[in-house]
Length: 110
Image (cartoon, rainbow, N blue to C red):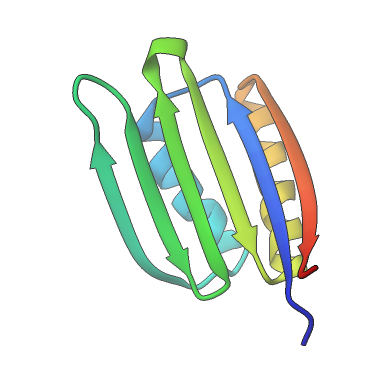
């Protein structure tokens, strides 16, 4: 097995965790990821970070309320699941009219 990570990074114009958390949880399920654990932290005076530990790696969400932006990053060793997640996120953001910019990478062991 080759050591390869499929990485998807996206900035979105929303910090609404009441919207983002259930939606990201749903998209992980639709993409057939196996969630092992979830951890979160709210920062004072503002900001929020959470992480889903996946059998296939992890998904992180970081909010920046002062700029009305959130950063989402998925790292996965499963290319098919990664592609499904990316397609689901892109469809959701387009449908919800949420402004975003993203990058995808394949990272191999040097």
